[in-house]
Image (cartoon, rainbow, N blue to C red; front, side, top):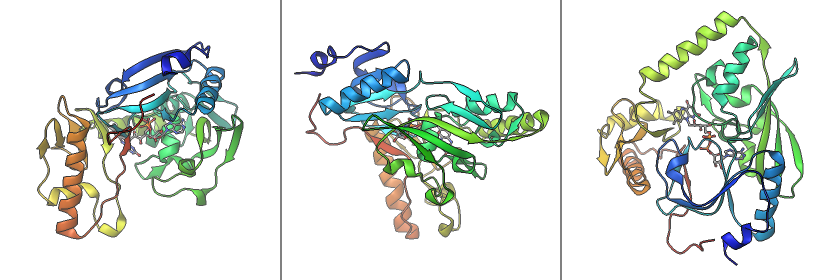
Length: 309
Ligand SMILES: Cc1cc2nc3c(=O)[nH]c(=O)nc-3n(C[C@H](O)[C@H](O)[C@H](O)COP(=O)(O)OP(=O)(O)OC[C@H]3O[C@@H](n4cnc5c(N)ncnc54)[C@H](O)[C@@H]3O)c2cc1C
């Protein structure tokens, strides 16, 4: 039975698409078709669709805001579950509870309205709350794990598991969620009361700083490589020293304003970006003996032969 036939078995309120171009769903504006693309309307929908994937043995990819992924030109085999409609924020006086599909920057904005301090650092970073937990996103000296109290995960057994955050489970842009099978559906943050004026000023400064650094000039997925203290300088500076700043393959370019960002100057293919990433890695290794660690995640089918669904 093909996917179109199989999906007749389920009834969800949300939307289903076949062969959906992933370039519409990534900040890179790159990516081939996903066999099946589902946007559950609420948590019940998500459970129905997720159990369908489990029962029919359809591989799934959980999509946040697509801000840290490079999806291959061949696209994604199986199902993509887009959580963008699972959004909502609540404050119960102690914890800020945020649904996984909510943009993390919106959660930061909500905290500001409530004069809650702690989330300013993440303001204006693209990405969903679930994706930011999974990545343990970090900027301006703080990580998501610094403010995370707990998370809820829809497991592959279709139970909802509560994870109580422990500092030792996290590292620099590393989270325990990577090892858990399932979908983060909610995050609970511990923030403290602050002064609205100070919170707003900090957020405004951060936004201006990102704009000045040219983060939003071209489609990208942010930093390509992680920084590593042992290298003695940020990855961007190391790459600059190889002379690759501004280097282009197809539509992909090592950004002129930040060498650790590769941008899509228009019509870039995932293969252009990947070749450029590999070129940077090889040059850095040759010149410095360092192996840069990728922060960007490759998603989808990169070699011919995978079964289409
Ligand atoms: C201009 C720009 C600037 C950026 N600056 C920064 C920065 O300063 N610091 C930083 O850390 N990152 C930065 N990034 C990268 C990106 O914003 C973060 O990594 C963000 O946390 C990704 O979230 P997302 O929802 O887009 O995740 P996606 O890219 O959609 O997914 C990333 C991974 O998380 C998984 N995932 C997503 N949601 C869930 C879920 N609910 N449950 C389980 N798994 C899930 C996906 O399957 C995938 O493996 C930047 C990106 C851009 C484009």
